[in-house]
Image 1: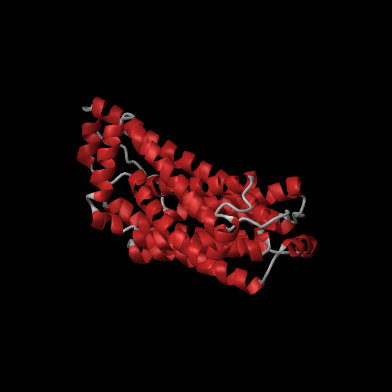
Image 2: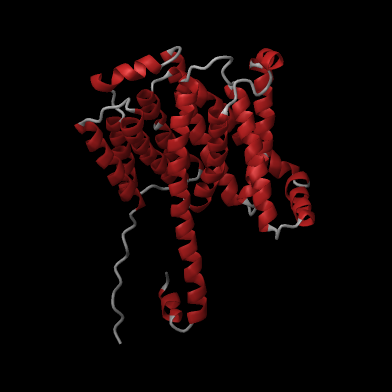
Amino acid sequence: MPDSEQKDTAAEPESTQSAKPDLGMASHLKYISLGVLVFQTTSLVLTMRYSRTLKEEGPRYLSSTAVVAAEVLKIVACVLLVYKDNNCSIRVLNRVLQDEIINKPMETLKLAIPSGIYTLQNNLLYVALSNLDAATYQVTYQLKILTTALFSVTMLQRKLTRNQWISLCILMAGVTLVQWPSDSNSSPSKELSVGSRFVGLMAVLTACFSSGFAGVYFEKILKETKQSVWIRNIQLGVFGGIFGLMGVFIYDGERVSKDGFFQGYNNLTWAVVALQALGGLVIAAVIKYADNILKGFATSLSIILSTLISYFWLQDFIPTSVFFVGAMFVISATFLYGYVPKPSVNPIKA
């Protein structure tokens, strides 16, 4: 802050008082959204993995239809949020949707690229969790943090500090240690794994690159325009639903015509759909109030929580000393990345 602005601060108490609540609210929203993202990611990984390995009678639910159902649910939630932001007026809601979406076709079309990539990514995660054990999936998927950082630097011209680059390295080392497979926990995961390990690895690696690019691209659009984040998510959801339906009928059209769109759905399936829809909204809020790399750290913390839940609840993981060392690495990296040293204030001589 320039010296002239510092000197005028005492003379303008009203403006200062009005600015502080705004900054405090933004800070609260950032950490609330990050906390919800940790909960959502942890729950989604556990429920999605369990739903893809649970053996039940009848056909298993189709992941392609689950992706579409999540997009529809996200659109409904965003429309309700826009409705609430406009004093619960149907007339105003219709006008806003028409002005911001229908009457701005070029702005809306900008979302087709990240929407298509997000749809591909969501389908790939189902493939990965159907073919990889949890440890391999989670540690490999954390490569998205590195790809997000690289895309942020190249696409947004964002300059990371030395501490941030160090924290990225520490984070990757910590996540690797936390999820490093050992003899004590490899056999349960092997019993649960389904299909080809190679297919799962290719799916999760592709998802890492698509997640990094789409996330940064969406952040760039959000910060270059004044449109509401909820309007942007409606646009994403519309394209996501269209691309998702194309995937359903191309790859699963025969099974849908035979057993129906919602074949194999149960309460667990709907929980996965709801958590996936919630993830899109929370991530949008995190991008709005924080950034993509900080979102990656929240996701990494959720890995620790999901691993602990696997040990205490599912009892399919035995923690080792390597796990605790990795956990300390991840937590340390989180604080290091978010730490901003306060500038030293020189006392003003009278």
